[in-house]
Amino acid sequence: MKLDVVLGLQWGDEGKGKIVDVLASRYQTVARFQGGPNAGHSLHFDGQSFVLRSVPSGIFRQDAKNIVGNGVVLDPITFRGECENIAEKTGIPVTKRIVIAKKAHLILPTHRLLDAANEAAMGKGKIGSTLKGIGPTYTDKISRHGLRVGDILAPDFADRYAKLQNRHMTLLNQMGFECDPHAEDADFMAAVEYLKQFELVDCEYYINDLLKDHDILAEGAQGSMLDVDYGSYPFVTSSTTSCSGACVGLGVNPHLVGHVYGIFKAYCTRVGSGPFPTELFDETGEEIRRIGHEFGAVTGRPRRCGWLDLVALKYAVMISGVTDLIMMKSDCLDTFETIKVCTSYIVDGKPSDQWPFDTYADIQPVYTEFKGWHTDLTHCRTEEELPAEFRDYIAFMEQYLGVPIKIISVGPDREATIMR
Image (cartoon, rainbow, N blue to C red; front, side, top):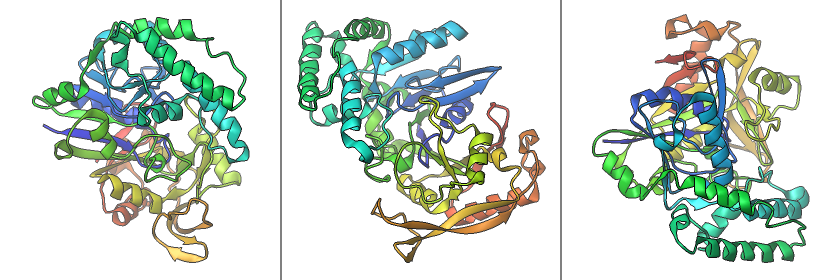
């Protein structure tokens, strides 16, 4: 059987949560493979809305098992709050539907303090961190100082916690960052006890055993252009957001990867600092933000908005070997007279059709323009109902990217989805 992977192909916020929720009906298992609670997957159905930060998006499917994989960094306090909110609103037995990898790393309260201290020290050069402790936790993981979920079962866990906390306190003191490092100790330890209600597994064995019987859907957080290696470094997240991250984050070999679903918006958004070649600073950008409700699901920050960047999108498709494209928020462009897409760049005065190495280069977009469709797409449920102008837009993108667009989202609800 195969591991099918769902990825965001832009700078995050592409709508992965809805698509995983839609696709989850086809799978018995949904697995989260990287990232932490700095990203929120928004789901809307039956008149309710949820923002999932660490919980896999298959949680609302009755028969689906949900795995929090090795590559995830888990904040016990945030995770407990998220699970309790879901249970309270829906009655879902979250402790029965979720298993957690023992090798997933723990976010301590002092990781969040370090995140804030690092961001403050950067001044104008800050990267726009969500201050959830993600970067410092991955730093501890790579430097081999971290604590993992499986460690909470050790009789000396409190000592291990104190040792790492003391290390963080030394760093905070060196940076002159004033704080109370013990303010959340009690909440953290209570949340650790809550984690013990879940089945803690050796994810690599667990998931490979499941793959003997059925396909599994793997979901990532953030987007491909925030990949720590291949994104717009240093304005990136701290994990591998491309398809290879699914193999590392779950313990699955590359031969078992099946479909790679790549999700993108009909336009582009970005939160935080970093290059954004097609960013709009005019009324058009404001209108896209307003129509698309482009504000961070976790932070509430207004997102930077711009036209679709096909150069960056084709780059992300190449890196992850995308087999099926999924376009989100198509309906948000319904009222525009002209639709633009970036098809090449002028980088430091020279034409280019590649994403540049230099994050600080002068990147000017070269656009191809399309006539707007002036049709309310939210009422469309079949491909035949889509206006000709929109179908031309789709055909151009498929030719440019070399990958078919298999799913088109025309609204936030599950039903507002056209399968091609």
